[in-house]
Amino acid sequence: MSRALIRERARGLRHLEASAYEPSALVIGILGTGDFSRSLARRLVACGCRVVVGSRTPSRFYCNSMLLPPVASQMEAANQADLVFVAVYPEHYSTLVHLKPALAGKALVDVSNGLQIKQEGPSNAQQLADLFPESSVVKGFNTTSAWTLQAGPRDGSRQVLLCSDDQMAKSSVMQLCRRMGFIPVDMGLLSSSLEIENLPLYLFPSWRTPIICTLALFIFFYLYNSVHEVLHPYITGGKNKLYKLPIEIVNVTFPSVALVMLALVYLPGVIAAFLQLWRGTKYTRFPDWLDHWLTRRKQFGLCSFLCAALHAVYSLCLPMRKSVKAGNADSWVEADVWRMELYLSVGIMALGLLSLLAVTSLPSVANTVNWREFTFIQSTLGYCALFMGTLHTLIFGWDRAFLAAQYHFGLPPTFLLVLILPLTVLLSRLALFLPCVNHRLRQIRRGWEKSRHIRFTLSSEDCFNGLENVSNV
Ligand code: NAP
Image 1 (cartoon, helix red, strand yellow):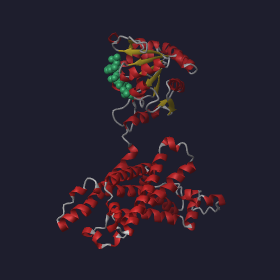
Image 2: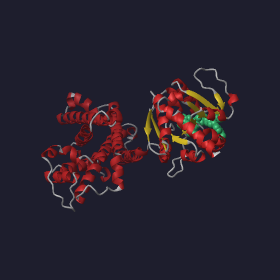
Image 3: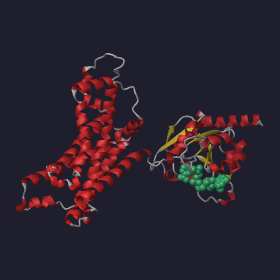
Image 4: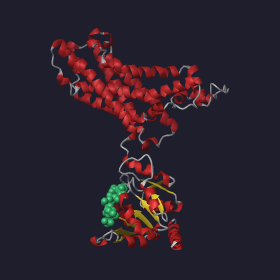
């Protein structure tokens, strides 16, 4: 028996070897006749591959299209095929064990997904490999939906993540992928299959903290503004200002959230810089929370952009009372007109810069610029956006911070509260530009360590682009 299996394996491997040069030389088998199987079969046939589909009940199927492959029994399909896609749910893998001899020596592609995210194995692919030790299991195509297969690689993601312990089997599946118009991505050994299976199950993992922060800030500022604008006039003068809740309060809440979120994009970089200065080395790891925060800056920035864009739209919906007043010669107040003009102009510039940051954070755009250009846009222009946003808020506040009437129930007006974080970040950033601080930070970033007293001087070239250097965390 074992000799027969070895012979079978050798035959299968010879076929795979041939396929490395010409994938159409292979007969592709698909076990299962469900959604995935049908879409895959159609795509393979359209690419000129020879396909046979294996079903438990082939008599149910009547093929009347040139584009559909024949449906045979599972055993016939397993016997005829050189490379087999297992398009059945992992719960049913054990019902396929009678195909073991027919599948020996052949590549089995496990396309299954899990029901929930698993931290520990074995993965579905590893379970399949345990059931079929004489076959070479390749994990892949699970991140490709039946719809993408049917629509072709022009829609949806074109990448197909693959892993296997058998290099030759993996190469054959990679060839097949390319033939179908997809881009195979080698993820290494079969031990990576757990990660690949978990991928389609994640629900915006890197967005959780930024979204929670945005929502928490929105709720906080909405309530805070409601106390100022609705509750206070009601309690002190009996005035009903509830009409402000749907638009006006939302419109002053969004810019508050946008500015604080933008400050939160740049705050971790500043904290990291001060931490490195204090420790006198860059070789000690940052605490986990800071690491986590640093890797989520793009998402924080995009949430900030969303809030700023919504603020712009809400502002357009509101009647510009001040401008209307300014148009009336009787109530022309020069200072108010200046304030409104500057406020709008700086706000529009801040939104424009934020839009630029949002666009360049898209992978397809980011790939077209080099690292220095990317850090220039995300760091230098990002700080400009933060500065403009802060200025926009300062002009909005104008002299109101000094008026006692603005402190309802003793609470400071919202814009004062909002300004704390952006001003802290901007001033800290300025402190990092002080020559002595900037020089030491650049030394640390080039490997200088306080405890080792390694002495070296930076080249003059290095001194010219300090702007990018201090922000490169
Ligand atoms: P499906 O529509 O339910 O099809 C499953 C097929 O498995 C059935 O049509 C059946 O075909 C076959 N099968 C073999 N043994 C079976 C048994 N003991 N009990 C029940 N069915 C059995 O499922 P699907 O959507 O095609 O998904 C198949 C696999 O592809 C799953 O592992 C899934 O995770 C994976 N996948 C699917 C998609 C997708 O978009 N649908 C995307 C990525 C991955 P016969 O009755 O003809 O034998």
